[in-house]
Amino acid sequence: MARQAHDATGTVTTAVPARLDRLPWSRWHWMIVVGLGTVWILDGLEVTVVGSIASRISEGGSGLTITDAQVTGVAAALYVAGACTGALFFARLTDRYGRKKLFLVTLAVYLAATAMTALSFSAWWFFLFRFLTGFGIGGEYAAINSAIDELIPSKYRGRVDLIINGSYWLGAMGGALLSVVALNTALFPADVGWRLAFGLGVVLGLVILLVRRNVPESPRWMLIHGRAPDAELLVDDVEYRIERERGRPVPRATATMTIHQRGTIGFGEIARTVFRRYPRRAVLGFALFIGQAFLYNAITFGFGSILVRFFDVPSGSTGYYFAVIALGNFLGPLLLGHLFDTWGRRPMIAGTYLLSGLLLFGTAALFGTAALFGAGVLNAVTMSLCWCVVLFFASAGASSAYLTVSEVFPMETRAMSIAFFYAIGTAAGGITGPLVFAGLTESGVVSDAVLAFGIGAALMVASGLVAAFFAVAAEGRALEDVARPLSAVPDDDRPADGSTGQQVTSR
Image: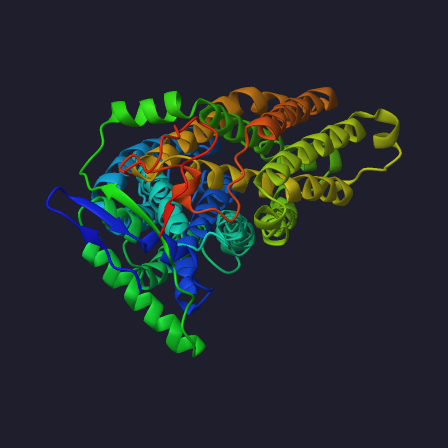
């Protein structure tokens, strides 16, 4: 097995990245997936539960003096603001102090804030801890995505990242069904049921925290921050476990790279790297996040109102329809994820964005055709099925946005890059989205809803076209090959031109 060679100047030559990438799938990798990936289930649960219980906690006897509009407006905006702030704040700390410390801290913040939300006794308390819950969740995105991509072998990175990000919709589905039970006053008093819904999030978070304690620090991060011996020992231990599990040696890794170990990197260098060295990738990140944010808001902001206003679905039953839509969202990354590793990033990212946009255009056309609508061609079930098909592809595309920004920028900037583009997409969805779509989808006018669908579809198609030209063929490639670390010692004269990274040396 390869060992590091280093000198007094802090330069280290290592095969750790190659050793991680050539590992066969094992129980150790499943532990990574469960420990880190399940946080998206909590996020989906959080967002859906709040939307579903808004009408209940605004009623008399809920224990809070708060209006429905404050729950879905003020509290939702504060959650989004907290997520954006937390992503940027914790990302900086993640790149500086390591992945493990921060994915433990951010989960602890989420748990404490959610528990305090369940104990809310006034509107200001509810608003404060919705902000802090978002603050913790936002920090999770940067810490978790960077850790997952740095620990999962390159052969599986695409599908694992997509499925993990898509698991958000398992939480959304659970939240929708949980709200139906929690809001049943025959089972729980009006001032207890909604608190129990938040309490379940705390219980799930505690279970995840117990598993996450066993997830190690990223060896790639340790290499750059002066802990090369620790990184080597960690990979030695992982290889030993896998060899015992499989009963045979793991393949030998021969590719090495040389880096200058360093401490923190300033915001100026991060910005220059992202926008000057990789401008096409920056445009790609913006396009992918903005496109999926608007498509999702075009549908999710209006689905409940459309079902109630146009299809006479009782407001208390919309959760069942949302659970079906959420299932379609999860199946997309689950069933299509492996194609991002086999067919490739560019055709799959561009294809899922373009196809979902075109399908939403088709759904808008069906919905807007008065003759078809009047003849009953569309009803609550068929409309929900149309949304399911659209979101089956859109969810895979949206998940690939997180994958893209976590693998196409250098390791030293990875968490900050994820946080930056996540904050842009979240702000677009949580701030601009409501301003654009809320009035359109709640007006009760068919043409307004069609316009909302059209805006989301158009931006999704535009993002797909950007991906067709700018997406990076990262499938099966080491992260250090996709984007050469800033700390890497160049072994030839090839410049980083913004479209390819430098291949690690082989000895």
